Amino acid sequence: MEKMFEKIISEGKKSGKSIEEINAELKAAGANFHLNPDGGVAGWTDAEMEEGFIPAEEEPKEARRTLDMRRRMEFAGTEQIQWIPGGRFAVSYDEDGYAKSAVRLHD
Image (cartoon, rainbow, N blue to C red):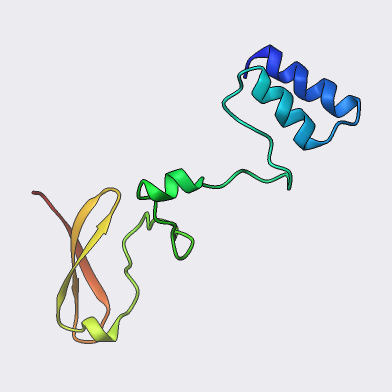
């Protein structure tokens, strides 16, 4: 952020100006951003939404970093492919659903 913009914001806060007044000064000074009145990060604009932005329906889940070696009765006697950031693995399950081996697969 340019020092000029920082100065407008800090002096505006010190003098008790509203967010709208500070935003007007920033715009007049050529800033390509604005302060959000509710204090949060501004969301997507209508123009961005029209360009094809599709908001997520739910928060993304944390990526798995290790293989799932838990007992899984539904996989008893089978071999299942698991993907983690380290690659692709074939996990073999015994007749009781316990994972007995995991082999990294090369493409």
